[in-house]
Image (tube, rainbow over all chains, first blue to last red; front, side):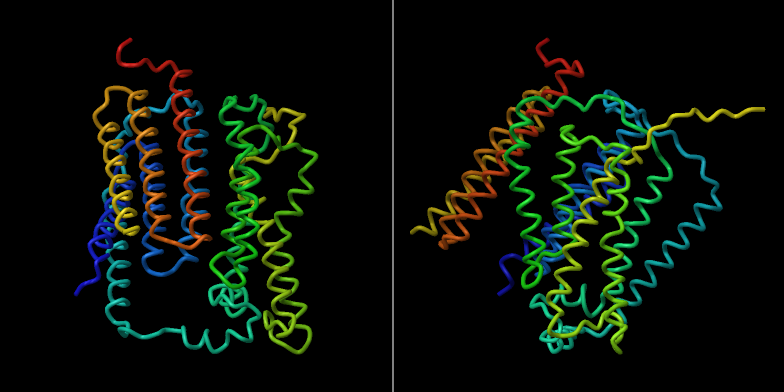
Length: 321
Length: 97
């Protein structure tokens, strides 16, 4: 007898593909963003169906919630005014046909390569699952995903954090200045909503970080939810970025990366490989790294949403001839 | 018996969601659409939550479901309010005007 949820899975898969196509093909950028958000929610559901709750959490919190907020903010920034929700139809771009064909050829090459890799891979193997399960007692945590991310393959995670750091540095280089407009007045209903959800969301974020040791959760998911509380705070004008806060912000941006890399190097000093935590301190070290990473991730995502370095511009730059 | 009631509640909840979606697609202006969507979805969500709570049986699960329902209802209602408020300020008329 087939799995009774098979029909559900098929509909879900079709919906995910359909939404992805819609998000790519729709002309209106706002509709595209909304389709992308729904696409992210459904793919989080798909990850749940694939028994990967860690990925589902990350997809829902970062891939959908925060990325959606960043995309909407970018759109608002590009259009300049919220009143212009209806964008003019995009003019047909004049891309040289040679470029188009090259792009198409490259895309087909990539798809063919992926297909070849998938079809050529052995079926029904356990992958690295057994190796991870064997080594789990040495990792200091009980959740295999956290063990892989923070211990066995910590390099990958370090690089992910560096990517985030690079993003915020670039954003601060591109745009500076103070937001002189008053915070948008969202009304008393929204204020009540924020008052109720802010503490709850903060608790959920910290809980996800803590739960990451033996259940789905971790620094990225917790950080994303804390960043979402930060977004609420920014949107409500409860906190306004100020030039005087920049040193603290910079410190918080690099905190996670520095602690992560620093601990790796310190561990390496004691005749070990970097990231080879001593077994009895592994849990404490991983928790320390994850805690600092969470702070950095949350503050960085918040700064990315704000989208500019809060620098006072005293002088106008003049181009003298 | 309890399982049957739970499933019936979930079924009734999905009906409300379908009604809300039909309203979203069929109603003439933004305010009517919001009216259909937020009210029907709020009720549908509560029914589905109740059904799921009956099916789950453990106290921890019921508490989680209650929390999820409470926050989803809260954010749904607030979102509806914000959209309507924004549309009002941006000068969007309703269909009768």
